[in-house]
Length: 295
Image (cartoon, rainbow, N blue to C red; front, side, top):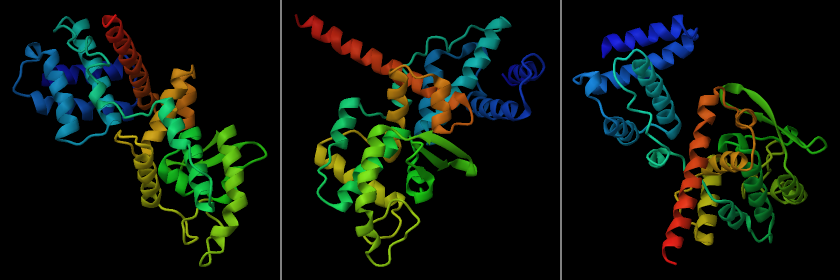
């Protein structure tokens, strides 16, 4: 297997013209793959071995769904090459999205999002929480991007938000109608929070003491709302971002547009949402078929 991997990396460099950075990424993933299966002959590997390897990456190595998707993309490319060279057949071609379901990010349905957003606006704190949820879901923000927003990052005239993302990369994303409506209502009530113990006038979202709300603070608010609404999924702040991307894709958005909105540097990262969307289609179809059997 070692020689096969070296040949594949050479093929990527010479035939495909990949950059050194991309080559190093492929090499890193295949080194991990080789170390896991170094006692195996490449021709003896089966589809179930690849599935077990993905489970190992998630369970033992605690890799994120994004990283597992990247590993699988690398492995798929490797086995397509082996099949092309007639070394062995492609054992990854039938690893469909249903089998990958356990590795994909959790998402909320659109009905669950509507349920989550149904907040009684009876205090300045409720207006703040409503605005944060609408903005996070409506623009696909990371929780770190949300809590670090300043007043000056919001352009209500042009309906845009300036986001300072990972690696200090800036991007501008649209401000949706719902987010804008509830952000305006929050801003009208924000002065109450500013008056509490010398509140911070720069940060957009403030906690009960007038200080910038933290990631943990937002997570606490989210968990309380989930319990109140009876939503039992394993939801984190990042679930809202995943849901935003999946619902955009479901409604016909171009993958490249979603990549730009999320601030992904590589579209491979964004492609995971195609798997989520397709899995949801399969799940809905299966439920329909089950109902049909009852007739």
